[in-house]
Length: 239
Image (cartoon, rainbow, N blue to C red; front, side, top):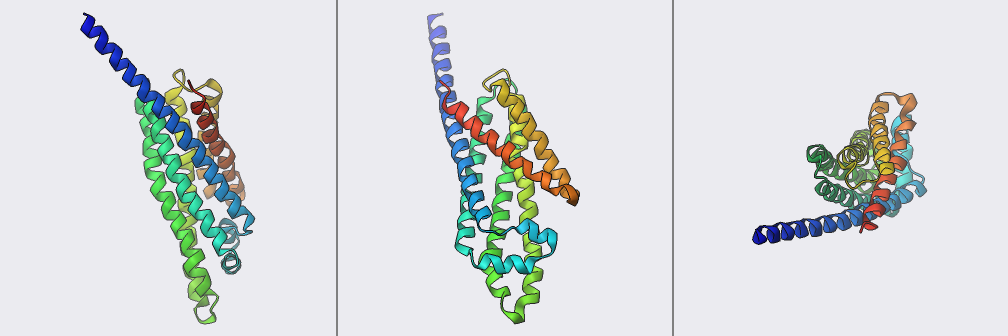
């Protein structure tokens, strides 16, 4: 009897220690990943270039001419994003490990980031190709037409892959994790925030087919990235 009690106690201690480790690592990677993604976004915004606007407005020539002057800044931007998505994907995996009451629902979040992280990295590499390889050569007159045609295809792939990956990283995982962790370790206000991030994430995919409403897709950034920042703070403050 005493041996059984001691064994159960030791097992409970191991589980508690493991969960504390997952919480700290999950909080650290969620917070740092979100901050790094925001830094990357600030670099992209301050560059004055916008791939999505160029694709929508048919001004790829103008975009390619603009990126040549801010090449180093955009390379830094995309490098930050690659590191950021790796950290956010890692964070979601740690958060899934904290969910024991509704584990099957949490596993859906793991599938989402398992799909999204490589997809996002591919999209960022496509964007890097535009900046580093295609833009400089397209400015040469005898290759301009071919370069613009290639840039439109590569740019479209990069932008659409990024749109899908964004919803799968900071849209659907907050939704499924909030469902899985409610009444367990996630505070109610963060649960509702996760629900909202999930709805906005789905909206960001729907408006891809509605050009007039495409701007609404950007709502996923403050809602989804904000949730990642918030969950990071919550877990790092957890005792």
